[in-house]
Length: 367
Image 1 (cartoon, helix red, strand yellow):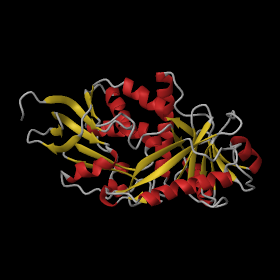
Image 2 (cartoon, one colour):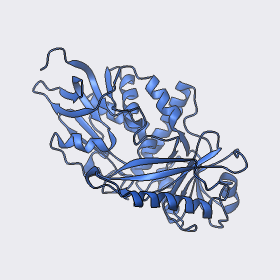
Image 3 (cartoon, one colour):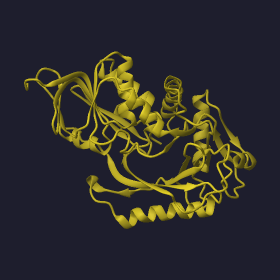
Image 4 (spheres, helix red, strand yellow):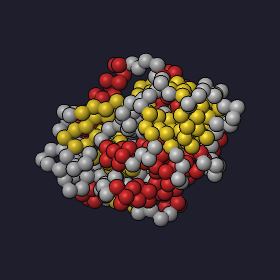
């Protein structure tokens, strides 16, 4: 043991939304927390001005997790005095929307329904002509990401260490050692939610996380004619406008709308990206806007590139690997689930045990 080593009950590596949610939940449990972040909190995979909160998933267990998270989002909004999820809802089109509606009905207790083209136009006035049915998730909406990150960061009770973690490992004393560039620390347990850096830290203790790494692009466009009073989030799997994997969400104030494709560019072993392929994703997003969303000016005003860390059982897959007091979180599309996921991770890190559904063998989020 190194003399003068820093200590706290739990270390959290990564100050994205999952790490901050975990730190908040640990605080609720009255334990001391140290959060490690090499960059600006919330500017890695959690970056950007908006995300979609949705209940719609193929796995009913993930629907239930989203249901729990939505209540905590409301709780946080009341605590911090700021809107964290818009009240405009989410509309989804295509076969996947119909399939997921049945799953949500089976879970129960959710305000979800089929809507006709007229109501779809009211909820999403920027949409072009579409005469098919859609699914409305009334309690879905656009997550106010900047407000959420700012509020959770300001509420951190312990130390935020601005440094890059190089390794974690168990000690003979039953603690977990963290070594960063200028810090060596010991904690009773450690939660690693470091985005694409999680798999590398896990390899250091002999765990091979089957994470597929890539990058995608999300572009933001101005709304023509001023902000509408209602501007729902969109998931379009219909193919009616030439794409089957579109997601989109309004920024605060409804004056801008961010649009992206679920497709992404592979980066094998976290390596180099094909710049032409990434640029092509942006071109496809703008092409979709020109065809499907005439209420937007098709000249993008902002571009956001994000890493993708996807598990083999699905784009919504989530898993937590456990070893010697260390918990390694992996998955994609985790923003909406962060509140409930953070509480589950805090419970595990303080001795209550990891939920079985979060273990990799459970394949949470599988289709």
